[in-house]
Length: 175
Ligand SMILES: [Mg+2]
Image (cartoon, rainbow, N blue to C red; front, side):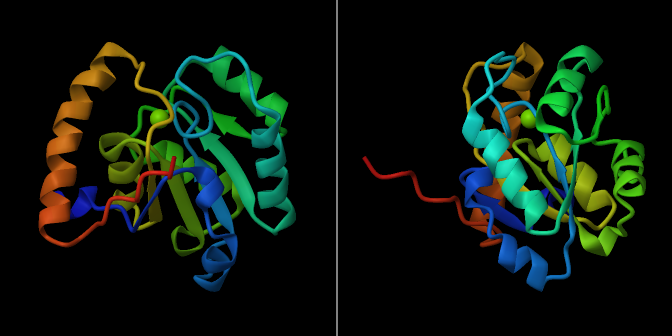
């Protein structure tokens, strides 16, 4: 079980994603989580640097698709804003929304990465399909109450993964 919770990569934020390294791995499609990965949980404002980042990813040759467990209205709004497709109410870690995203992007599992802030939805779901899974540090502490409970379990799991030398926590930003 622990094996399925192990991210292939653990970084601080999407902005730290090394696009060239992904390309070198043969990855050309990226599934993106929305809340606390791209934007703080239930935050309404969107940052122009996020729009810029998505633009940069696409011009580097990647297809992108949001896969979110959040409600359609919110997810669709960001999908429009960023100009990328999205699958709301995804019920991650179920496999079907990831498969649908790959269908939309025309990519195989080997060509697809998933980026998210939660072990038990983003990483578990991606690993079940053999995707290249990338964990990011959540943007905000304020979260859905069930998510907060899951964070405790997640912290415990991250400790186990680290104890086995399977992951290394990204360093805190300086200052
Ligand atoms: Mg999230």
